[in-house]
Image: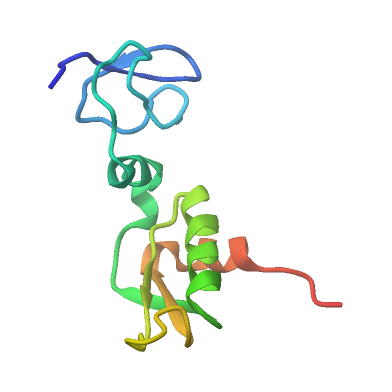
Length: 121
């Protein structure tokens, strides 16, 4: 595994590998383009999570109608830096059928609700 420092894509400053965000501008840090290390899907997702939204007990913010909608919501929240967990009964013969609760840590609940708010006609 390479020991190259991470860089900020915004200001190009280098940072130790144990940091996730640039102290100067707040951007998520990335591996240098020449780095041999390829981040896994799980690592790429984890780097998007804002620490201030990852504290406290899990609370329900919305109920999705099915697995596909739940995964769409999960992606929206992740782009806002909010981690989430999907829960609900999964039928063995049809895993995408059935409602899923979308749970987020307490510290991210308000931001999640704002991110998911939409205007009804």
